[in-house]
Image (cartoon, rainbow, N blue to C red):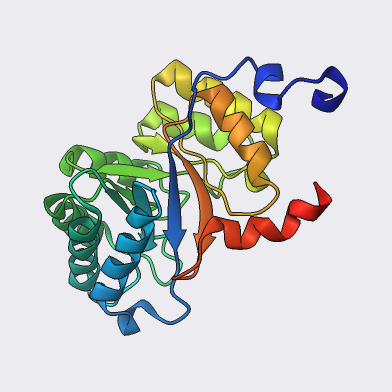
Length: 239
């Protein structure tokens, strides 16, 4: 429809509310995190900042959370005071935290200056993250990438589960559903920061995020040393 009308998707969805879109990169090491020196994550943050980006996220999967906290300190030192560092527990992808573990980690990360802690507890736990927000108020608690349709987002907004919601377009049910989720978030005054990965689909994701006025947009889930254009340049000949 956008091609026929000669209009960008963001305009068909209500118009872009942003002139530019804040973005961030996520880096996942190809080995268990216990084998990754915190300084290596700091070095990657330096490369990201030198490339012009102002935010980076890592997985938080070490056996001892203090190693992850040390890594975030290295990243913040490498990126500078205005460089945002985020961590992702991925809803217990390698074992769920207890609530007390999540609280201890959240407070330590907040002290280090981390911007957000993503999915620290199970995806069907609406009340635990809400409690965590109250008891660790100096760090944003975020999530929502695994939810389908409107119902779980509505439930989370009613219970105050997350400070920022992160729908994943491939999971929630596409751009129209994402736009509805964005309207729900606007009604509750909760920012939206869509989850994503790099590739051709990023173009559509950016259009929807622009229409919603997203807080930020993930534009790459990469291994260290890589950048988004290493992925999307391969698709340019077919555009």
